[in-house]
Length: 366
Image 1 (spheres, rainbow, N blue to C red):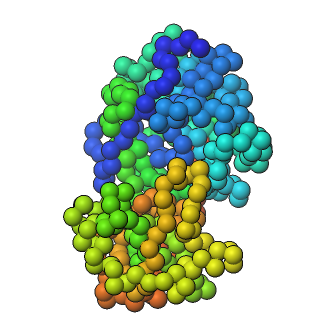
Image 2: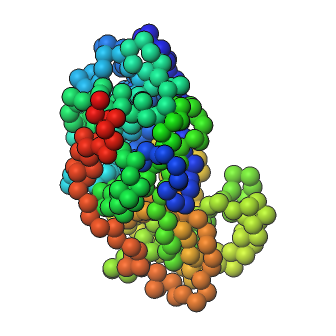
Image 3: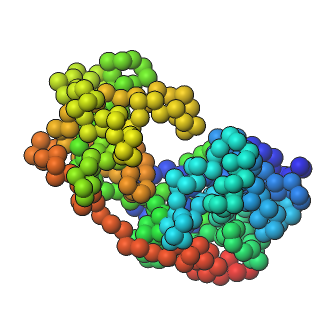
């Protein structure tokens, strides 16, 4: 492989902001998948990841699609996504399952749950390094380069119209997307720099405190708090964690929560319930996702309620780690149910994927 830019390349990143930024901007949907930079030189294709490790072996079906749809020699920034079985939402949990050490399993999953790729930046084409060019020019070149592409390779939607971007922000969450990304039209591509902007949904929920994990720095400090919500059958479901605390607060929380520590036999997530199919934390979550990390936890009597900030749900769980807001001594744990969560209006994922063919800037059609 001989390209103007060679792997690995760290992708350009985004910093979180609370509103759509001002100025000449291009706004795009924020895709919920694996950030990837694709390197293609003829029949050679490498799929780079955010951490620099290649993902090529995990997505053989995508390699073939990229050969059919990308220019013969190019470097393209984008996102690997997985469309859920129903076809109307992204499935990040399913995408995670694609990273498997066994080649036979990789081949099976490639057939059962094929991935897609959404392109949103062009870093090199033929012999030319485009990273110093303004994004407006790179986007126009990308639109031309992918003018004849077909699924599962897509060109992301983009607009410079703030009203349309605000509409996307409200609508696209219903298809499993988690916000909007903004890029200055005159910006160059800066690997590993937070020069883009991301605007994500932010909501609050009152959750039951069900346990804690200790911090890696010591057994007398809280690492994360385990959160639960009651489902329609009255079962306390594990919905995620909250874990960003100053070190001193971690020590204080550890002491504060000791009176609530209980025995597993009296806890809603008792180990015996694993056999009944309840989704609970496991005493030894030895999986490829934990990386050997100790995920055992101390069970707490489910008597305290904590309010947390979250962006969106992935199935029955919070997609990302939540943020602590406050304790809610005025709330009864039994009142913390899924019913309090805002349900995004359903939106057609196919319409989002197809929106890349329509643009609000004539430059993209050149």
